[in-house]
Image 1 (cartoon, rainbow, N blue to C red):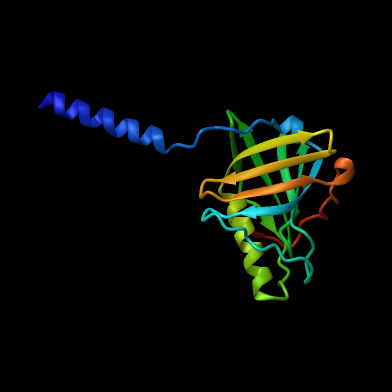
Image 2 (tube, rainbow, N blue to C red):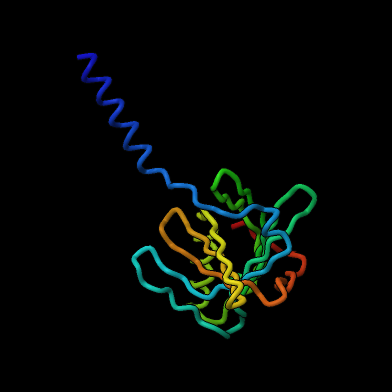
Length: 173
């Protein structure tokens, strides 16, 4: 009886270990500080590409990494609204802390859905991977979520995305 319980416990632990994501982040907060990125492709968990719509009352979706003392800050445009929050990156894992956003309405329901879906993926982010191709002058960042979505960002020329204005009149996400 005791042997059966021990085997059952070991099997349960093995299954829990299998369900945990493997850390794959190959960047540090120091590497990212002062860099800006623009979303180029969104691979959904079901394998399809999420349609990224330009224009409307928003610009491209972007993310910027900075430091405020010892705090790691991420900010950017979610499509219609600006966002700002903190993050931790260590041991191969990324954790995005709750972000605040401005409260502008998107002009179309599709754009509003894109923005909300992006903020949800960002909130569930688990890893970041950076790839540099100096021959093509290309620097990409892939953010993966616990739900299986992958966002591919390209570094903005000059390395700096426009700094979002102060996020006033905010709502927590």
